[in-house]
Image 1 (cartoon, rainbow, N blue to C red):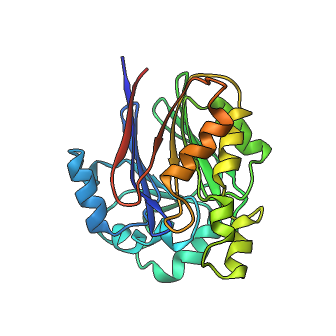
Image 2 (tube, rainbow, N blue to C red):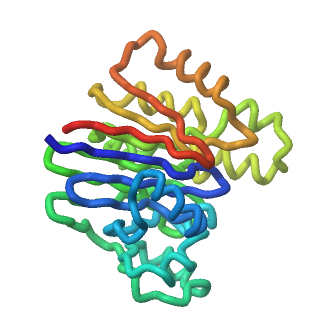
Length: 257
């Protein structure tokens, strides 16, 4: 019996990084934190940075790539990235030898990594699906709406990281300037608690472990998140196990498959 392990190491607009152990491989999704923070977080899991088999980048916003320059300078670990994203960040990256342009599925033994577009105000942003035998994990953050590609990824997933960024009313009445509120609420912005909960409610019924991620530290709170999910999912008794990622702490799930 194999064990799949998922750990959000950081998850917020201040920085994002997620570790996945699946099959015989260890993958990192995004490097939006410093190399020092990443190293210390992995050490808590008894993993060295050198143990990472590959990195997958979702898009070029700073909270997802902040640590890439130092990371690629110090470690010879392949970084898979869309070409448009690479073109944007390449000016601030000295060592480009690690980068591999992602234009098709990538295979690591029995693990297949595929990608799908996400609606976000970035250059060719993507989410990821990691398939291992009959098991599937999907990583879906930084999206303004749930498209057919994203719905399919959610439906396929036994394990899921899904954005639940903000409470709509808290955002509208908050201190952000109008243009920023408009951006977040747009179809290329971020997914609200309500829309994330509805996406789960309307997904294909299956037992699923979920980490809700990328919560806004100014436009969301655990109490409002729980209230929204209880209102939408509470009476349905769907077979979901849900955890909430923290901005600067490790949140993990282990699953035997």
